[in-house]
Length: 178
Image: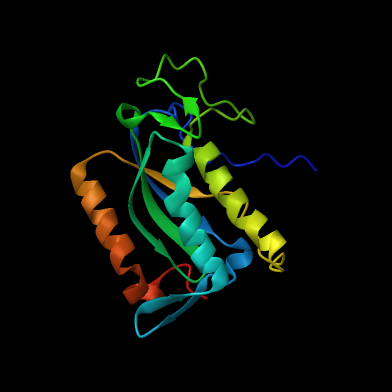
């Protein structure tokens, strides 16, 4: 059987370039591993706490990343991530350039592009899964891919911020509700 994999990224967009990205990452099978919502408030499980902590640690590993609104839901996360090379400095003993050079490394199938959204999200997902494997939660799995939307103007950013912030209040209406 020759099944062609559906590409969900824009083919002409360099996902390592500066921009604002709205990210959604789901648990495999949309299982509620991150906690529960009661009275419109999210109560994190231990894995949910780890996912939240790992998300907020991203800028310590990728110095060109700023984080904006973020929420952990029972079976997925939503976050706004900003790639900004003007903030790059020294982290973990590695000095990185203050400006991104030419984009010779265009996104190509199966070739990770340094500092790209995919590399960052894969590192985040790996960190959570690694913790789960070490802490008797090896049943936890991520959905293989993630959803991303490029936010191109301040109005879009504001709308997504509101969506992320109010997501627990609208959980029953959410398409990921189970």
